[in-house]
Image 1 (cartoon, rainbow, N blue to C red):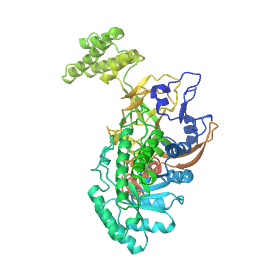
Image 2: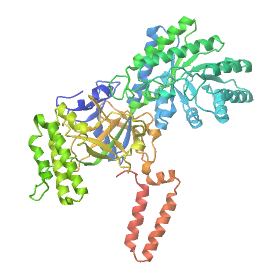
Image 3: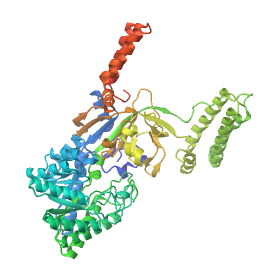
Image 4: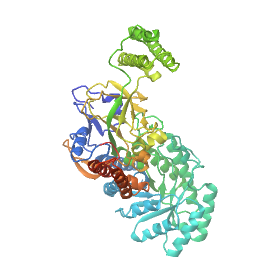
Length: 629
């Protein structure tokens, strides 16, 4: 959405992926909208960053927006409730949030508060996650689903929680696990609520297809299911089996896969019910995807359906299958963590500097230059028009030949320097000629010759680990100056000393590209880039590559008047904290450094004033951020 002035958010496809949460103001700033109140005044992101910087919180920063989290949670429940009503479904919907998607206390706490009216529950896949769940104010009729591998201590705590009134369902993943559950339950004298993870044979497509199908890690296949039913019956625990869990997959891109997998889950549900299991809940796990690119197609970073279509397909599939079998409609459960939290967080970092692949000045051609230098500079005469590709080919050829001459010792460093400057000068002309002409732009980008490098103050491995590890795409764009046509195309490098620390795949309006449209940097002016939809997994998967720690985190609530309130803030890791994570004692490090300085003073290499400066610099660094100040 734009004002009267021309803005260029369309380059980045904002209208396609923005989900009604973002717009660009007439003065070119990305602004946060209140999705629950479309007519409310949006809050400009640069003003948010300026305001928190004034409070001493600088980028890089993860910005969480309360209203965005609430919007996704509400969307999911309203879509299921609408689908249930329209289909005449006799059951209800109960969602649970998988804690692994974002374990941060502030996120879980806000989800629990916002989810009270929906009886929203939690899913725990480990003992620490179970302990988090048991510390939360779960609604009386909310579910607490326990998935994953479980030892006796996990199972004991889960069963004991039933005495507190929790609807804790222990999902059986293996036959051996049931034996532990049975033994602990008998020892405690408490009847547990049980579920069983069923391995579907139907495999979905997408990045996580290996987690689906009968070769998936967790769950029981047909043979083990029949064996389990016999053991449940023989041990007197069959009446405890209330839930069937069938994980469809994660970020499933194709709605047809979801419908087919749900249909197979229904077949197992019908058969287990006919074998005597008093099932009341069908848990279809994850699968609901986020359209990161806005392309609306079955791609690893997109989906070909809406949340409403997803819910309608699931409800209709279950209703048809169970009506045909004459079985009562169960409570539908999903673990749609990615959809609920992905949109709620934005990662914002500052560009520190740029390596530009062009030069403003044309070098002088000297009489004693090799003829290839003058040949290179002669390319300028035919860059425009129909000879663009020929000129591009010639320029690259002459540059490469001159480099070869230098390696063979046939030209010197000064002449090579002017040749490189000449090529960069031509590169600027090529970029200018290609700008606005799609055919020429494709020719230039195909050769990959002119992409600038913009260095961002962040660690890819810490703040955007899925981008590095699994080629996840997140929408990304400058958050200011969008009333100016970007004049450059750049890849983004981070401040780690790793060649993988770069962003070189971007979502644009006409698809994906290897460069992001950006503006020329201005002396003394912040240039900030926002990476959107980072609320799922990114905060919990980050690592300490080069010992860059967590960035600052700020949670805000939009006031609808163009302002905001800070609800919560977490300061970035200090260097001392990060050192302690990798088993160093910061105090011992300081003491060791102090002794080294003392020895230097004693030997006369360092005077008393320099000693004071060194110790102060070391102490200040220990207390400071791992990122550039």
